[in-house]
Length: 124
Image 1 (cartoon, helix red, strand yellow):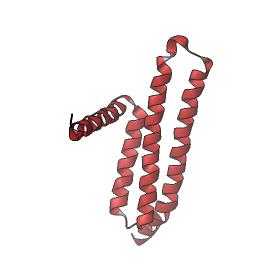
Image 2 (cartoon, rainbow, N blue to C red):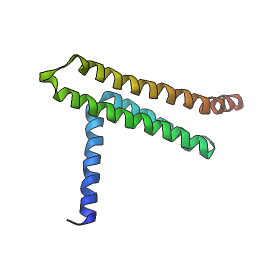
Image 3 (tube, rainbow, N blue to C red):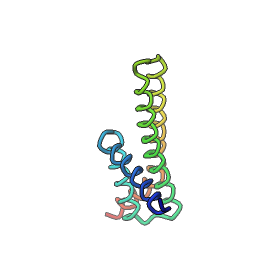
């Protein structure tokens, strides 16, 4: 097997995972929609490079954390026949981590974009 076919197979698995998450996880779909809005805003508004980088970074962080959350939820579900009281705790803790990341991403977005939107509104 060549390096390129191995790499292509790896990318195929990765895209399958993204497709699976998009089809089966409502939260991931909403976060992808939010990421799309962020991308449009980054393209449309005159932002500094560092502002764009921060917005992209926190957007990516929330999406990756949601993928990890979904993965861990499925892993915990595998143990369902031997369900332990901690299984629900693990899922709640992961969901909480995604919520914290999303809240801080929103706060950073507002800190960066808020003044830009106010300035834009004042010009209209």
